[in-house]
Length: 361
Ligand code: ADP
Ligand code: MG
Image 1 (tube, rainbow, N blue to C red):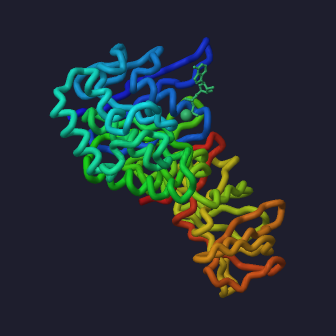
Image 2 (cartoon, rainbow, N blue to C red):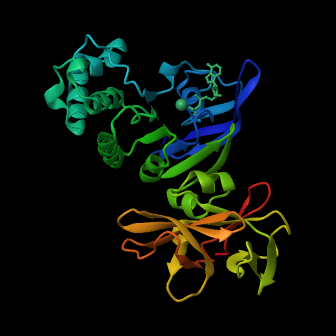
Image 3 (cartoon, rainbow, N blue to C red):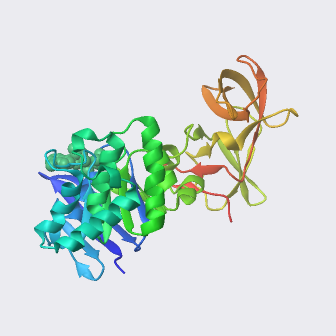
């Protein structure tokens, strides 16, 4: 099996550090997504795995082999670029064959692999065309096909969907998921788009500011973010962050107060919390408009009707706005006084450094 292991990998450009002691263990066959804001070092990290950038410190292993000093063509990985990098004067077949011809693969073997990949990607009817005669989505498939024929130990994809228009992006995303299900190859996919990360990844590596914030399955990242950064980066609308003015012990669990509201009872263990500078984190779906007059109280300011649900931006006083959720068909109008029931077990608390505390179990 060819697991990919990164051991305290660091990188700087001209004395400016862009990645600081990044470590991870990618299992063979995983679909790993590097997710983070622009400039956080995702592409640099991917390019170091591919061998297109040198590491300054640390080790990279693919399978049993240490590869960080090897040239790209000896690492057995295939990179798929955002701009496809197809040769414009060559047919699709020649684009897909080129890399294998260069390493002296027999002609019949090349033809077999290209035909297999073309069938898998449903581009068999395009093999005689030139890239200019293809749509963006078709070029993307050719670029992936060119990687598939090399039978790499891993596919490295850097924002491969970002040049596609919205509809095609969703379709290509689905195709990529299906392709991974079929060929079960290790894939490392870079994106700043949380939806792509949530939908494609077996595990997401959330990166920020030169470091890994968290590695986890999409639902771990979503439901139990390790830090305030992760909590705010994943999920739409963004999680509500509310400064807590007081925290009390309610039977071992923390009850938090803010904006003169009745305390919100969370599932977070009181004993482990620092005493001050806490922030409550609640997703909109855990703050439901209630009809029984229970819960915290505020005034609806903006009502966004999304069809299947309604978002109610609610002023709680003291300059605090909470995005709450209501059913798709909602009678709430701007200016209405509303009550909001908070699901305390889904609420989380962040300390001053941004570390998250979750409900026990
Ligand atoms: P991302 O892909 O997450 O948007 P990059 O890996 O491209 O981020 O870049 C990470 C940081 O490294 C950025 O601050 C970027 O400006 C810097 N950087 C990337 N490549 C170079 C380079 N060749 N020379 C100098 N700085 C670079
Ligand atoms: Mg990038």
